[in-house]
Length: 510
Image 1 (cartoon, helix red, strand yellow):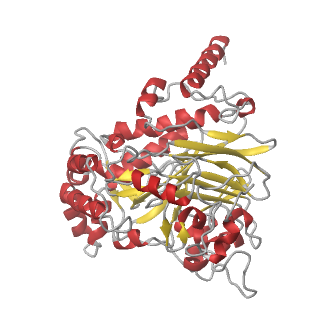
Image 2 (tube, helix red, strand yellow):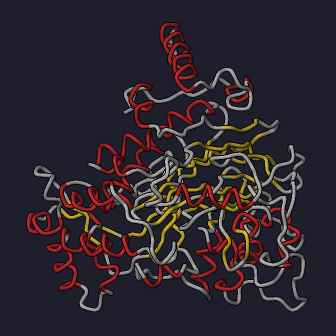
Image 3 (tube, helix red, strand yellow):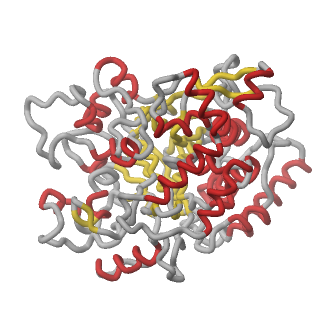
């Protein structure tokens, strides 16, 4: 690089640090975070300005927190993105926001000699259904959300929005019904939106991986697709807002899973459709949640046989075997903490034992892209939710019957119509002696409501090498429940939808 280029990069990084308020805190961007030369991004890539990114941040925002480690082989950044309807007005608005997350949280942690994995969230592309003119009515509805009269588990506003979107995408819905006569009407709009998802979701994250030279994880509920340049296909399946396109993206079949994708910085499939030329792996979620099964009508991933093993085995990266457990699968152990039966068969049915199966297949890093539908500070069937959550993030690296080394959990936050999404993004490491940390409310144990098997999850833990704060400091559970209700859709409180956007990063070592 020329001397003038070096000076330009120096001043660019300095300006970014100032804009992100990240240079003054060693916990946000330590000197060792940029050891090895810092980021060396390709010239000419599309990078939003610091001013643009500052404007797109929510009111409650914090720079990424993390700590470098000696002997690092891979640096991981877990995004805690706050979804907002303003980010899906058009394709450019979503693309810009996702790149701003990179600029805000990943670029300051880049090292030229260390590969980076950036983990976005489960359902990261779901809101892009409301992109453009077809989403105008739903976007307006989202500005004045109603409360959830039947609770978080019965999001009537979401159901109504899907009905509106079915009407907006009606030409594509009808065309796919002709192609796939047995298609489940609940997921018809997700198939109809294949072209939207390919442009808004797949191409956005594929391009980020290539442009920034990183590995990217993100999840969406979408069908496989192919590209067509047939004018008839463009007329039927294309976005009416895009007048001049030379190809359209068409669903290959009617199967719609909750898919977690991994893209790399280099193209490996030159003949694939745009958005998939650098796709390295896809994982189909199994099991699915009640909302995914009953409201969206999604298709589960394979639960047994070779297909299930391939789905759970994951992908090798930088000497680690990444496995993907998208929310619910990360809780599927088949036995209580430390109580593995002697005759246990971990891969007999991954519905019941997804985590032990991944361990048996050699996975050592669990990637848990998250979109937790519901309030964080709340009592569920399993008691206090943050305590129950330890059954995934913390148990991954503390369970004595498996050998996982890391868990990376990236939470989506923010209200979507009448459904809240909330949580605390975290990275855990087996055997770590990090400063003691805990999820909010986890210093307590309520014998009347908490599950006895979860008592081991209570208290301070040293395995959290990174943990995002919640919107308030820890407090008695009753006070936390009140805050959770104030954050929820339709509360009318000043805290309504005031979730924290941030990120957590850590170095993975062998």
